[in-house]
Amino acid sequence: MKLIRTLIPGSLLKRMLLVMVLGVLLAQVVSNLIWVQQISRDKREVAARMAEDLAEGVSSTVTFFRALPSEYRHLVLSQLRDMGGTRFFVSLNREVIEITDIEDSALKQLVLERFTQGLRKKLGSAPEILVSFSLPENLHVFNNRTLLLDLPPRWSQQSLIYDSQSPPILVAQVGMGDGEWLYLAALLPKPDLLVKSDYLPMDRLLFLALLLGILLLLGGAIVRWLTRPLAQLSGAAEQLGLGLEREPIPERGPLEIKATAQAFNRMQERIQRFIDDRERLFSAISHDLKTPITRLRLRAEMLDDPRDRDTFGRDLEELEQMVKGALECSRGTDIHEPLQPVDILALLESLQGDAQELGRDMTLQGDAGPALSARPLALKRALRNLIDNALFYGGGAEVWVENSDQQLIIRICDRGPGVPEDMIEQLFEPYFRVEQSRSRNTGGTGLGLGIARNIIHAHGGELRLANRKGGGLEVDVTLPRH
Image (cartoon, rainbow, N blue to C red; front, side, top):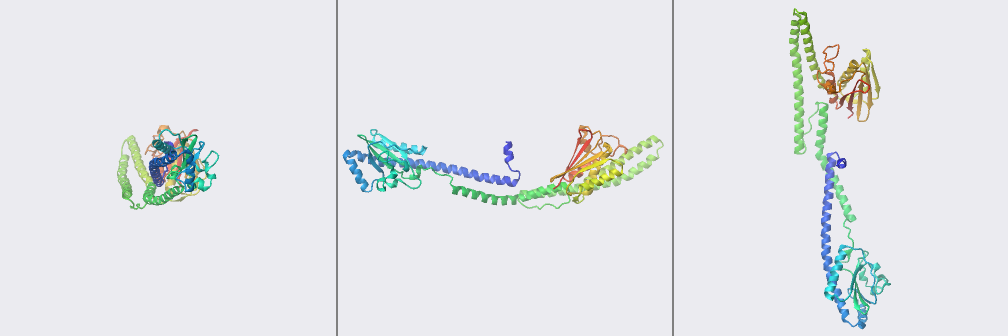
């Protein structure tokens, strides 16, 4: 089953062409089987009828010679040859001629059986009858030393040699008594009946190859025409994952594909409308919450109890940070920058310079290759968040860049304590931090990783976290080059 799955092509075009080719081949095989069976059935009917007719003629000749006195049989036979002979090659021999039989087959056995039955029906069971087939080049006449082809045409009845096919010759030897044998040789009325048929000749194979070639050319063009809208839809879906700033796809093609394109365009419109509404909502929340937060902070300053004042102040500061974090997360997932070539190594070197200015330890190794098509500000923000996490929580950042024709991998490692395995996926959740404090001195709001992953996903890439064997956390950023 696994082998079959590996042999099945992946693209729709190749699969449809494979189905058409297999359909034509299957139709040809079935039609050939039916045709061969019909020919075989017709051959059996014709062979039985010819064997019976031939037995009728041979039995008449044998009856005629048996009625003659033995001393007149050679004289009559010579007169018959002088007059042009009979439809058979006939001779009277003093010995049984050894016949080199042809290859056995069901059709040959049918002819011999029906021929022998016809002779027995006419001649009775008294005379000894020997019946077999021989090829002209192997046929002996008169005795076991003389070949048919060695005789002159007038003697050898060259009508027994049909053409270059050399069809088999039916030989009957009937005992006449006193050690004399009547020898009769004849071609079947349909000489090529026992010649092996080529049911799949070269011209038929050439015709089949031509038919398959035409089918592949026309079928390939038609299937490509039919599947082009699907390819456009696939490309549009891929681009939609990288940004909503794109034109709607053309709504044309077959009804089903046209309906799919319409549904896709409506989906894109609804997503864009949802994002616009969310931006307006967060902007409104930011504007509306500023005034009550400011009023609450003023009122908190007027409290008499210093402990209540500090408690209210911390709660208001946390609330303000959460509002700012939500707005920051919203802006981080809405990327409106156009794609442009970005030198990844230069971008990382600029982040390394920023870290060194702050006295942080960051190393950079590897080759980024040619420029990558990306949104520079958004990608810089994502990489900055990841590197800042490594610098803050891991005490340093080690960055490796691996380039290939298909993708670019940026690996960021720190030397910190790592993260419990059951918490790795939770790190991407909003406001989640391994260190639970909300203090600015011990960490941010827990939105940086989520924003970074959203930006990487918007570029068609992947972001994965894993604990290093030697200690610390490893972040792998994979960006496709398409």
